[in-house]
Amino acid sequence: DIPQLNEDARLEITKAISEAQNPDKSAEENIKSFMNNILPSIETKDKDNEFEKSKE
Image 1 (cartoon, rainbow, N blue to C red):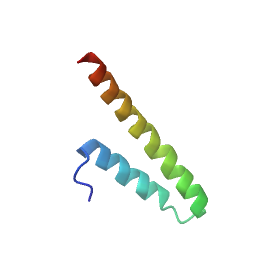
Image 2: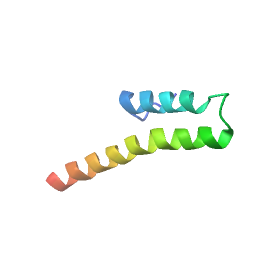
Image 3: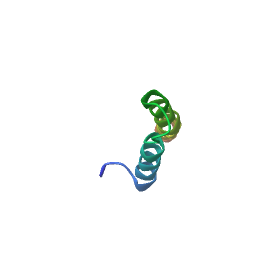
Image 4: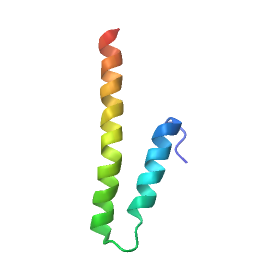
């Protein structure tokens, strides 16, 4: 469990992890899948935070 993240981020990570544990794919493919799923949501959160800071 990752308590310091909000619920949306937790769900994204959980979903990405479960998709990355596909036994039909190689470990490398699963890692790429995980990164592709999780990085956009992390980057979006960072941009939102920067935007919020720039408004202050």
